[in-house]
Image 1 (cartoon, rainbow, N blue to C red):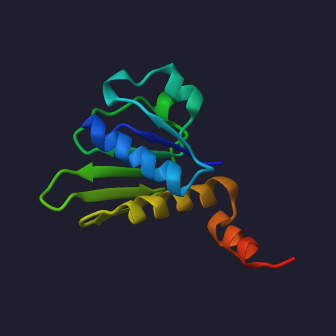
Image 2 (tube, one colour):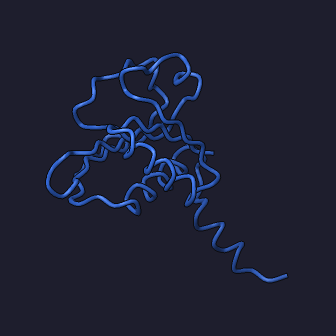
Length: 128
């Protein structure tokens, strides 16, 4: 199961992002925390995906050592995002929830070593 930490400001954005992930990927665990109060609770949560503002402070490696995918929201006219997965990094102009959900799926694959979205689609399409 993939764990997603959302620290985006303002709070309404953080809540909307978390709700979209929870509704579309109900198997994912989601935690909302303002960046300024990251603490041991986050370390215990051990997130795989971090969604944050590009202007957030850098959290310590102990707290975020489990993160395999980052999405940094770049506050521009079109809400671009910088994505990092391992040693790959790229920007998305006008990032969407679908982009974030694809990142959650990629993190799930990295963590579990399989493709859960593809296997669940196959299972749903099978008849007994």
